Length: 72
Length: 145
Image 1: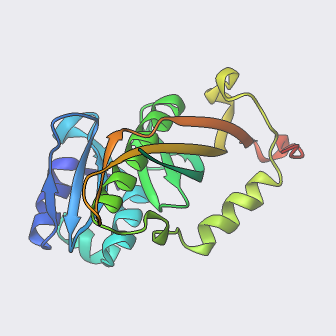
Image 2: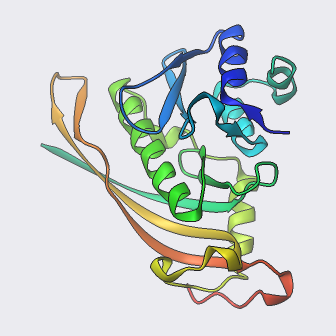
């Protein structure tokens, strides 16, 4: 089940992951403990984010996928 | 000017849960992103990798420490062994479900301090298509990579 980017942003911030919107480009950034991970935002906050992306994001920040989904 | 060259494996597949979208995965950086077409996913993944490499170098981290799990590599090589080499520029994305390619990234940096580097140019990419799998498993052909 895909998630909207706006919901993902809220979930990440709840979990202590900062979301940064650069001035240019099609990606935002998730940041935690000095590590960054790009967030596809080519459709702005309405972007639909699939499970494959969420799994990669969770691997980067050592977050359980089910825990992340529980915040979406 | 300091130049670094990276050799990355990219894989692309249709997003199973977001109709019309393609998922791009850089196995060497374990960075995943999405695009509205195969070409767009390639552009998005290139941008995502540039961002990741630059951020890691700014933070004195090695971007190659982010390697994808072995299962992702096994899956890619399994598909590559059953795919067919094509020209990425002439690829008809309606006829494929999975694409793997090897990409060379060249990053140029200007040294700003003894311990930090400031990228002065986003990394351009050179895609060298390696293999793809047709939509139908019965259409799988041998790889000539």
